[in-house]
Image 1 (cartoon, helix red, strand yellow):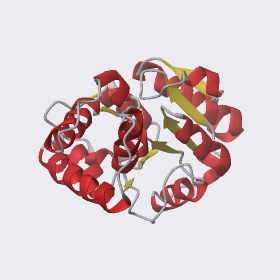
Image 2 (spheres, rainbow, N blue to C red):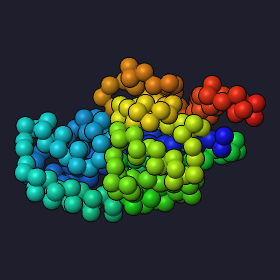
Image 3 (cartoon, rainbow, N blue to C red):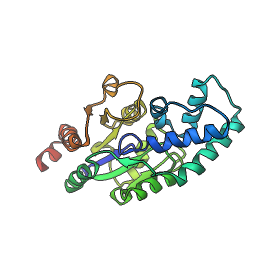
Image 4 (cartoon, helix red, strand yellow):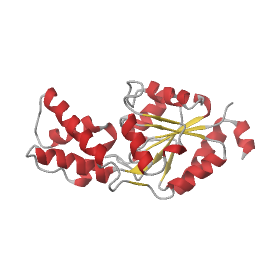
Length: 232
């Protein structure tokens, strides 16, 4: 069995990006003369990507825009967000030490996100994190989005990993459903962007801080592979 592969969701798992995403949403809405979306409402809409965030926010306000108008709003959103991608976004606490420990164990690290790939790379570059990952895959990388299991499978393959020695880390039902469908164990963080507590979604492990991540990962790897258990 090859080296373990740990695949991360991005927004709400690795990086607290909601401040910039919500600010972008409300900037676009203000340009349309629409009322702002409350922060803690919009925060939980982050994981589905810009289009979903816009559509669900409009729906919550009882508004319905034509598809062409949604396309225009998405374009404006991406243009503004790309220029403000790390104004206030920051890695969640203890991220780098957790990645250090996983790397020291020989884990390949990858990102599988519904954010566009180039925006994901730009965000991770701005935070000095992109060189931590051997693959960064977004919604445009393969033309797939979570919860499609092939998105995760192809991300693992791009990282030169194997399904049998992979673990996913995420913060939402989309992440959990993706991992389940792909046959990959899932660690869920409970500090992310979701309207339903992740513990109710029955992931394999739930953690409340990234300091707990290496132990959770290694526990799942040991459970799945006696060979890996002997290495640590």
